Image (cartoon, rainbow, N blue to C red):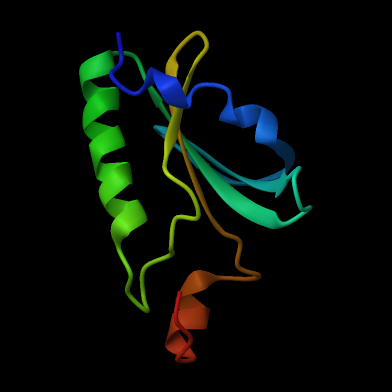
Length: 109
């Protein structure tokens, strides 16, 4: 079993609003945090095996500790849900527009 299963259940804290993008390993969606209505971005990565999911979870935890002007800050510890596949969720600030252009204009993440 995943060593991080105690994070299961946090998906209930969010309403999915719309799809921001998708790739080979997952999706990024705009979500609303139910507790305060804040609109955020949630990156969801899909894994078939628990070893890879555990490695990604460790990377997600490191991301949550990072603080840099050009790195989007994670707003809560990453968490895992288990459906047909193992899913790792990372919640971040939702930026309007393209992050590349935001950074180019001198803004921080």
